Length: 230
Image (cartoon, rainbow, N blue to C red; front, side):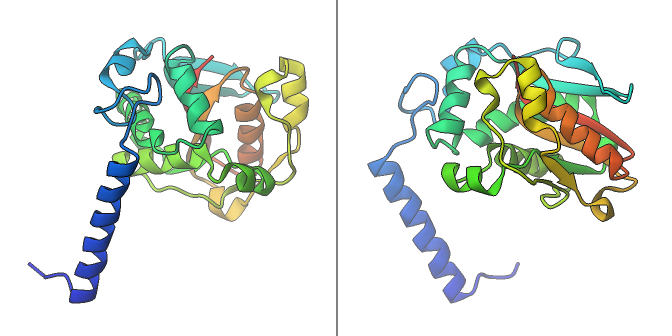
């Protein structure tokens, strides 16, 4: 077994010490109820979350082209997960991504999405990314990629213009808000089966617009995977 070099060992030791110090100063507490001692998503909130079974986790959307888009969702967008997602996205709690993505990976396995080729997260516009500091869909996608072994492609899809936050828009306004907001690179997409990852599926406007763009770029097929369904 190869041994770690002295500089690498020193870096690893420093990192562990830094993480230990952070845990002392800012101990992990639940993003749903603020309970200390059980990490970022406690067993009480996890048990209260309305995780979806195999049959009820699937939704089928009809694209403008007439093609069908299957959306697989891990849970209902209801308390306490709703509050956890709000903290995750808007209050700077990226630590929640790993716990949430574990359930997305589980529903992935239940639906056996292993025949696909790539995971592609729904992108943020650069301005929103600077404001938030991270792309929540990318964090979820990264953990799902690690758990499932499917490659993650972060450059295949990009948001080419800023959009309003969708949360307070009705269905028609959501569709208009994301119209022509995305672009894809055909050389990374053509002939590939894509799993499109996002955090919350409400009306499906964002997922359908992204899927239209991916299909035009030559994707063989697209399946969407989300943490929650409203």
